[in-house]
Image 1 (cartoon, rainbow, N blue to C red):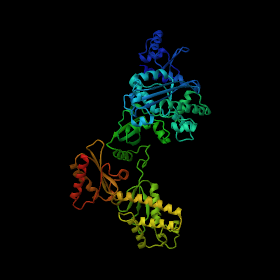
Image 2: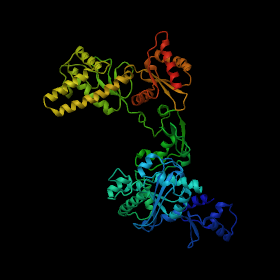
Image 3: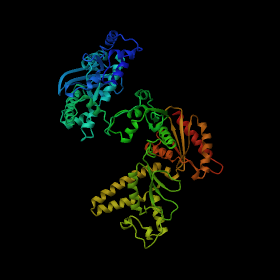
Image 4: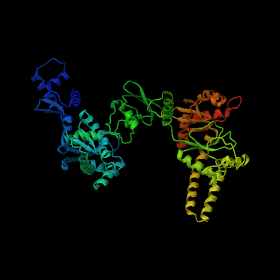
Length: 623
């Protein structure tokens, strides 16, 4: 009943009379003014969320009443909590400190240790110095909370990175009082984002350094509240420079998003708090039910919650999306990998307006030698190709690929220019030929046979055997040292280290770019289920959930036609292949098994290959 009236008054800053409030509780009809005044006064007088004004005979929300106050005429209570760990629970609080400030001065303080019902985590004990022995004689949370609530009353709470304190204050108020923590909260971290633009770091230590505040008793609640109070005093000076004098203006500044507009998220918090902490995909919808966005998450609850906080990391487009989200739907998956594949499939199929095609895909690149060309060129591609052209990779990023492309072209003098060549001795080649980084087939300075030898040397370099690339780079390093060209020697040494790292990865995963057909078996989080993915000629063609090794026979039957179908007619799911390849590049086989797919013969699969699939699935299921 009181919550309903509090919500109503929050939406009506002008306040409401007793009769108006009574009509919200009971069916309108009774016009006994004396009864209305007595009843509403009895109901609200002891609740600090409500304020009665004798001058105009109206009730108002205390928060609304406070917003019209001047900052310098307002009491703030700076609060800091130390907790036994990161689990949000009333019994996790081990220390509470509060400092009342007014007009730039500290006027009162509160401090207590709290006897936690949860063991103090070792990292907390090391950080704070608080251990179980110190808490043995401390009051329980119920007693400490009662004294703390009496100290802060209805005053505005200040905290640094207040989301942490707010979560524990809410949980404790809900557990001990049956209602959420209702005091307004100002976050000095959020204020610093607006008021300290010269620094990208706005933690307590960073701001203390900027303002010259000594870090005394850091990581203890009573020390941190003193530091936070000093930071607020400095921020108050910057507020004056901006002409911010009223609490309402202060709150508006705190809630201002990075694009300068108020941060608003219409999505009800209740729909987010009940989400599972599991991998999956989520869909955002506007107020008409139109799909806006599809995303993936390692933890659905944590990822969707991130949209509801006013973070400086939100781009302008993300803020535009957040302001339009009214509803969401989720699909839990068995793993992060399944979530990534489901997201890619949904984006390709549903084309949500706030998804950019390709933006959701992992950063991956291959160095590819073109085929069907008498003078093949080196090029960078993001996707596996048809399987006919050799690929070096998977590489971690395009910058890594660009560096490797320049190095390989320089060593093996292969062309990187676009287009099919028509060699002509009268043609003027580009700079690459002038610096002898290309043999210039465009100007007919090399014939097909000699260029083919260059290509063969490149293929040998990226193959499994001894690398002539490594030998050539070592020769250049020794030559630079002999000539006392130490700058060039250092550059070549860096190239050698870079190439060694690439070739180690190539020995491990080079078969992906060579054959471009593989079977990946990935156990799901639920246990007892294997996700099987088959990539054929660079396309994800079959994916199924397997619960028994005998199911691999049906999987083999479904996979066989993909090898017999012309490559151009295969499904265009190259996104799935990119996601799987990036997963293998970053995680290898520690989360499952990867098997190269040997092309079936005219009569179908070799029995040994299918038997290998079955036995691998069986081993993963019993793991």
